[in-house]
Image (cartoon, rainbow, N blue to C red; front, side, top):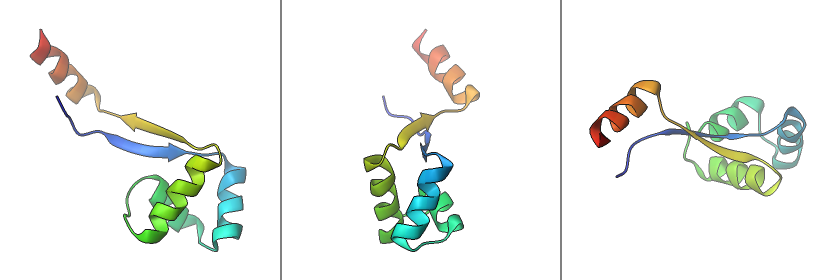
Length: 74
């Protein structure tokens, strides 16, 4: 069973600053890339960099979706 979930990459503030300097991108660009709101080449580079430098991929589903899945499987 596949269900849609929100995903994001969590990094600390220091890594965000490091990415801004090394990748020469702005804070809003990093924020959008890590929240998977953009799917450009730059966003993919930012996400890869973040994961290679300690970022953590987090997947979330809403309470209502989780409840529906549980109810469906009962």
